Length: 237
Image (tube, rainbow, N blue to C red; front, side):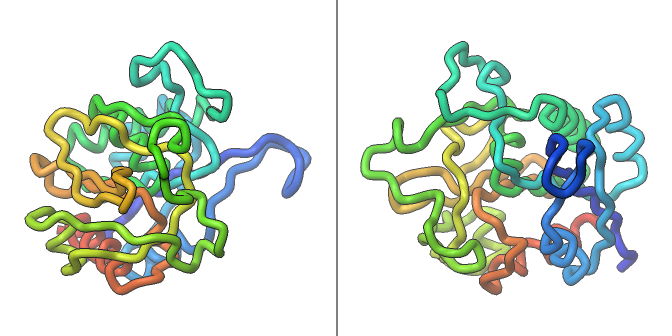
């Protein structure tokens, strides 16, 4: 199998910390997980006008997570919860890249906030703040380290995720306060937390279109590794 080129979206931070000028960032384990699965990671700056040019040099797209939210206006809500923090240029680029990839049936993997972005790109909506909308919810921002599981999810039989992982339940790490509310038209919910929060979505109409609400790049289970291997295999096909 040829080594597929996998584009990963970056986070962006204002001056301070690493640099006195604006800077991009990504956790090393995203790139490591791609490499271990057989792919070649490349990093994507936030230029919406260049999205199609990037896609022309890639075989698969990973929309990564980050400590920010999709603007509620993008899924039809005028009110914004006080906790919502947006990064508008990043979101504009990720929407352009995701929609462009989906239009050409390029494999797409959305991770955490990337799943939420993917759902919005495909016409779905989001819960803006889980504790306000889900009674007796789990701590989806887990207190223990991210390289440990925080709760379990139920994997729905008959789905792509179930075929990839080969398990009915899975311990996952959790670092989010938003989640899928209504899945986009045609999307299938393939994983659910014990409190009912959607943890996975997929589009059976496409070669590979999968979103997971947790962070499989930490590879805390064999199932996490299988997600990356399946994605890379399809990207190289």
